[in-house]
Image 1 (cartoon, each protein chain N blue to C red):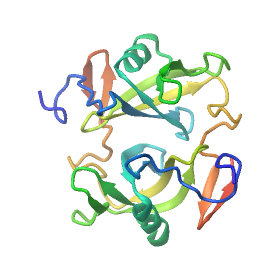
Image 2: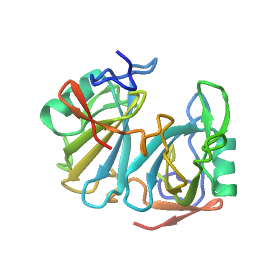
Image 3: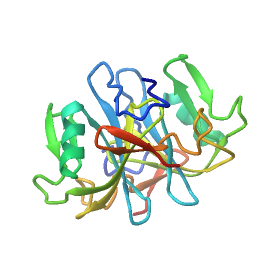
Length: 118
Length: 118
């Protein structure tokens, strides 16, 4: 089955067994965070409707909000043309960033400088 | 300078020298595509205001739209907390996907199936 034109989910995991996941807020399209998923994380995300990732630093499954309570409820999941990335449109229960910011992308790039702008 | 709290751009390139870039349409927040950038691609993107990536398959710089004309004009660039990803809010000159779809994410995941839905 062709990955680009087919109608079956057939993720193309990289050499580390991962795909990239981008999370947006379904309310306004803001990009909240970017993380990685192995096959298990993707399956749990789709099964439970709550975003679950693979933590590369901790080398374990990581349900977003498991400690903070700031879970991401998945309203819609999409996959890209070559199936190595997923887009999750979510309802966030709270700030998505571990810094407490709503989004991990809280700084705008201006030349070599970063401007905080949430 | 701390990458999370600092006000200087200090990208954290991975072992292959890359960061991840997510492109959204500034008009409605739709995720158009996801690609990778090396230091040169990031610099050119910021200097020219047109999204330029590193093609992992072709191992060369790749200005989006260089052959199709479907350039992505960068309205705003943001960086995430650990500076290993950038978010580009763009005005697309045409379809972002090489398949001709507006977005690479033209299929919704429903269980094991994919539903085409542009």
